[in-house]
Length: 201
Image 1: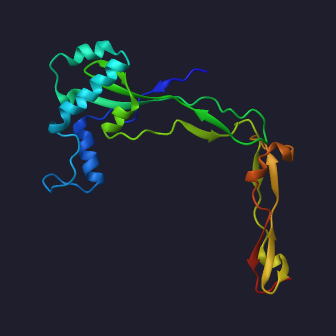
Image 2: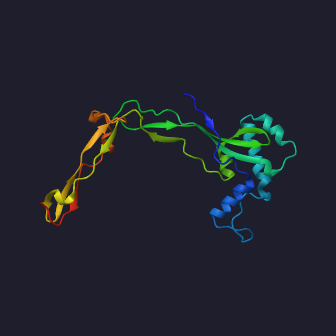
Image 3: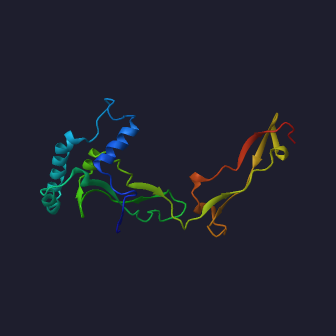
């Protein structure tokens, strides 16, 4: 199984952009004494963590690049999101399957890109997106529910209460009927419900 990456929407965030976003989310305006984001006083500590992660992952070319003069505004981080894998559900009517994707923390500096450990992106204020999700095989049939019967013409089950009904079928995407066991029993729509009927039949 091959997992491919796609660029992060909106591009990577700079430390200054992260500060502004964090301040807005926390109602912090400049000069009001609120919680500090990644400011100039934290740059040294932050970059030490970045370099330690690069060393651990053997990203030596980026380490050499960081030894050259650079501006903190040129340092960007992002989560690179891989493409979702195929759904693992093999048999129709069985519990939903799952899809997975790879998520990597990336460091961008000038024209170079290197991987970092995930907690470094979190230090920059980025939120890691889910790496798994439930799924269903798109070739499997789905439930299709018809409209409810009119309450006024439905059978009365007790005083001023009638019972509405509707047809529910298991069908393929092209509209062809399928065997009921091929649809997920857990997600089958209800076929009857009570309603208020002032003149039940």
